[in-house]
Image 1 (cartoon, rainbow, N blue to C red):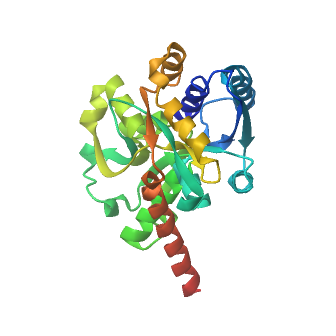
Image 2 (image 1 turned 45 degrees about the horizontal axis):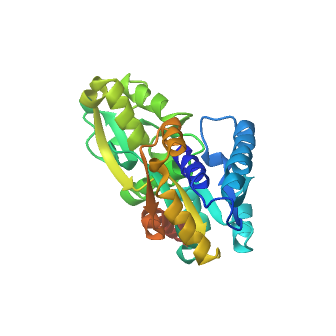
Length: 291
């Protein structure tokens, strides 16, 4: 989510000069998707960026923050919010494809993104069924991790995860990786970028850990335009954001948020998330029919 915030700040810094009639850009940020930050500070900072950077470049920008995706959805549907910034899973569970328009993501040169289920190579765990009775960790308060893991349990064992193994949660991906590495857990579901960073810091992690499952996507967090937003403004936003790395301010912000470059993202790149959502709904409907 830090990369999603960075892309929007870069976007604001590249808008048209003040001599042009100001456009209105209302940004809706889903706060629970922003990890490792003081949310009160985030709220203040977002509006400062909108006031100090947006207005200076011909944009009347306002940052709205949400703790409820349903509220963000309602404001988007009535035209109050032009740009939705949230994790991919929450967007897929809340919005239909036709309600969204292309936007942007922050990306890294050295790694893809998604989830990996890791185990120790020496433990002999080579398939999902081998996790029965084991301790499996995932990121706390992370909708994607919860949905993905539960879908795997239903698909591969026709059971809830709680009936297969002990499920634990950690606040940070790095903590889950280290607990598997040091034998304090049998498996962990972490982001691909987090595992890549851990491998760079400690090459022994790559040697000792084995990837049991991998799920890839373009990003974990997205900034997507509302389909109800005027197409001319959407096009202007797209063209401006793609120039982020060409400015001093843009480069500083990309570095600050550990993002290498900005990339345009089409709505269809959320297909993996919508697929996970459909799978979860199918299992829920199946369970309801059996009652």
